[in-house]
Length: 252
Image (tube, rainbow, N blue to C red; front, side):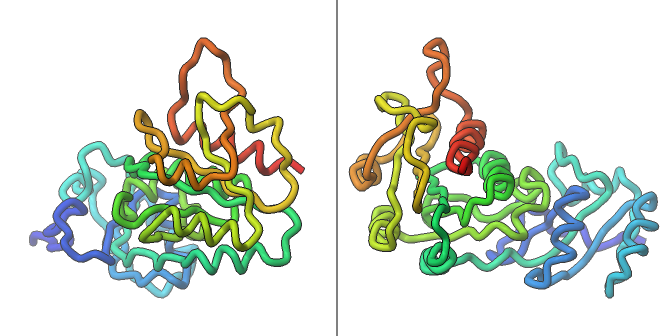
């Protein structure tokens, strides 16, 4: 009998708040998050024992690994795990500001038109690694949470706060009013990020690969900084650059 779980692929879904998460870390982390509304868990037979050991209040659908390609992208590294669930609710810029109120030193990351889901997923993972208060993106020009994004984030999207805002320049102004010093990443800046004062509250803005920050966003920054890399290298992948920047900001 033909199963109906693969009728709608991730690409075909027209429901804004639904997606399919895949990959062991991404799925197991989502299953532990009470904010996720679980619709269906699909696993391969060799993962049955691990799922049963978690004592979840859910009965998984068990299929052959080759059948995952019927409802996931062809190149998806799923490891025999897939989860149909809701997208996470977005935080508000005010939520991130509230988290910063009692902190002597903290930082947030702002992405200006970074559009690759896997890059954003890797950036989310770096945010988790370096205790970033949250990630801010423009709602209009950023991709929705997706299976590829969650896979790249390796489960960390479940606890990194992500704020989607209508206007990045206005969000930057709100951060400034809350005491944040806002730095824009610019390869032509004179100061490298390892040399800046890291005390207090800071926000780092990263633009898209190729175009960088938009003019109005750049003009709203308090200062410009660059990575301390060799002059022989013009730039790094945005996810790699974000990891280095967040590492530097996390130093005490």
